[in-house]
Length: 150
Image 1 (cartoon, rainbow, N blue to C red):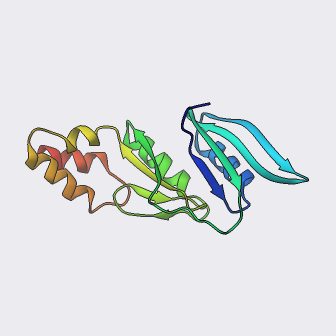
Image 2: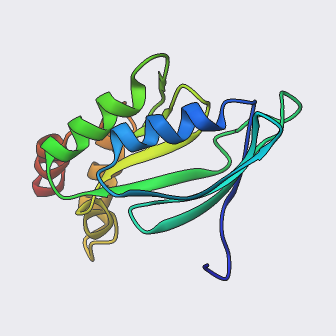
């Protein structure tokens, strides 16, 4: 196990969440599902190599966008795929490439090239990209590249 592992508190729907993430990501490994009686209590799993520990803790605590998971995408097709899959069955779009899935967990679906564009030596390029970014929900690589080029 990793030295530091995200711990996720679900509202008694952990098994549904794991099944959902298995339908979205190609690389999901479930390491354990722990039960108390016939109820799922906790579990450990990996998504694309990132380990998670999760608990069916009940409704006391909710996810917030203060913690999100960043998906680096190489192509617009990849952005479109994750965007649509993570929004299925009740997710919510937010601005600037952020969304919340149906469990309330926040994700950032972002082109890998964005970091390069935002840190370019030419501050006007980065500013144009930032302006374009702030107008989008789902990020569009072609629009960001056009803003970058000016």
